[in-house]
View 1 (spheres, rainbow, N blue to C red):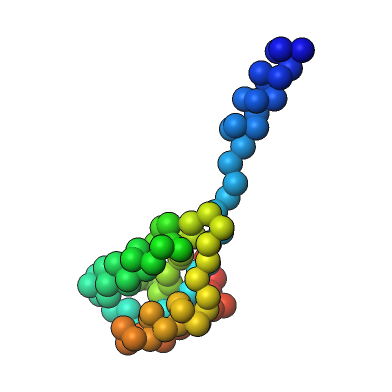
View 2: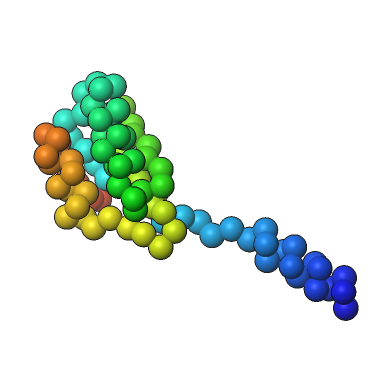
Length: 92
């Protein structure tokens, strides 16, 4: 019985939950300074755990902190105030 409980404990502790993420198309990014600025702006948001910016593919991938998420309005606002256009049907 102890071995079973120990095995169950090990299995449940090794299970990880995938963080929710979202990819957004961003029109207007042209250089590494654009990417750095966008990364900095989103890292300042407590809901965002990770930011990936692709200049080549023109997208921003946001990985959220557990149980958190930014609204599309907030994402759009953050990007538009920096001079970018946004589309939420991004391909990864």
